[in-house]
Each structure stands twice: as C-alpha cells, then as structure tokens.
Length: 226
Length: 42
Image (cartoon, rainbow over all chains, first blue to last red; front, side, top):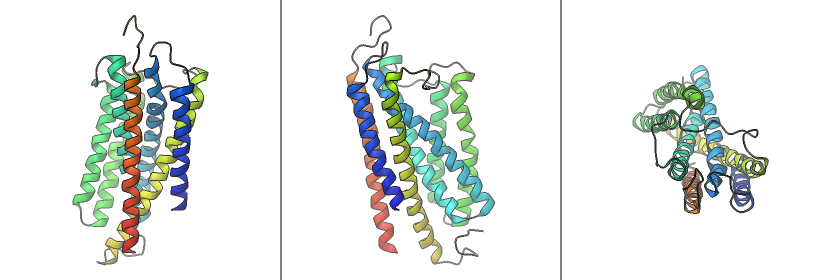
C-alpha cells in the first residue's frame, strides 16, 4: 500500500509542477494561443490511459491462463482507472474542440473509438456488479476486457488510417522544445497518479474478493479461482 | 477567432484543468474511503 501512496503523492507533485509551467511559464502556441495549454493535461492523460488499458488487457490474459485471483483484482482496478482516464480525456478533448474546431463533439474516428472503449469498460464494470459467482465474474470480465481492448489499436491508428479531424499523435519531434518540460512533467505525473490509483484499487479489489471467498467454499486453493 | 488564430480562450484552459483536477481529486477521495472501509472488515 505504501508504494501506491508514494506514487499518488509523487504524481500530485509532478502534476502541480508541470501544470504551473504549462499555465504560467511556457509561451502560448502560435495558432492555438493559450488554448494549446490544454495539451499539457490532455496528451499525458491520453498516453497513460492507453498504458492502463494495455496493463488491464495483459492482466486479463494472465488471469485466463493462471486463474489467479490477483490478476482479477488487477483487471478490476485497471477497468476503473482507465474509465476515469477515458472520461477525463473526453472532457478535455471536448473543451479543446470547442474553440479550435467550433464544436464540442464530432463523430470523428479517434473520438468515436475512445468513446466506444469508455462505454465498453463501463459495461464490463456494470457486468461485474451483476455476477455473484467470483469465478464466473472474473472469467467473463477478463474475456470482455480482451475483446474490448481490440479497440485500442483502432484508437491509436485512427488518425493515420482515416486522416481524421483529430490531429496526429504529438511527439517531441512535432512539439516545440519550449513545450517539452511541462508536457513531460505532466506525463510522469499522470503516470505516477494513475498507477498509484491502480495499486490502491487492486488492494481494495483483493480485500473484497478475500471477504467474499471466505464464506462459501468456491475456490479450490487459496488465491486461485479455478 | 480570426485568420486561423485562436484568440483568448483562458476560460477553456481553466475549465479543462479544473475538470482534470476534480476528476482525480474525487476519485482519490473515493479510493481512500474504500481502502479504509475494506480495512475495517479485516
């Protein structure tokens, strides 16, 4: 638990430093002006959302291979944290879209594919609430997570495949060097905060599962759901 | 907005940072509350 708390505190410190630099020190962008400052939270949220989705996908595969309850707890944590990040991503993107594109939302392939994954993960979290048997719940949500995560490559490549309204991915090569420091600080800040949340949420999921499994003899061995 | 340049827009910037901060803050509070609740049952 200490690791999770340390990551959360470190994430908050980095985010405060990066946001200060992004809001008050970095210059305004030539065409987007001050609105470009939204990039310092939007892009790190997008990068780390993808990372959390990938780790959730890997945990789901590991659960199906090992039937170890710790991977189910990681799936539950990953689903919830990636839902938070996807929701924030959509909100930030909408706020950016209004002054730059003139609309709050557009059914552009990038936005649509992110929204699809957000809705899918919300659905899987809801599914977990309705299934009482821990073993079935874990198997079904792992399978559903793997199927939903197929959308992630579509999210990533959508701007290349369809030359959509959403701009291509930002990299250090496509962004002025004056914007690098706040962007990197916030990227590491969101990384620490997100994975701190995942670590702590995994502890909550594992504790709940232990309490649930303590009553009826569902599991054959301690820590296993098969 | 004139000639392809976005003028102003601090309101949008503040809105985006506020939504982000509130999202992380509310989730963080909910998470620590659940951590304490599950600990009580141990």
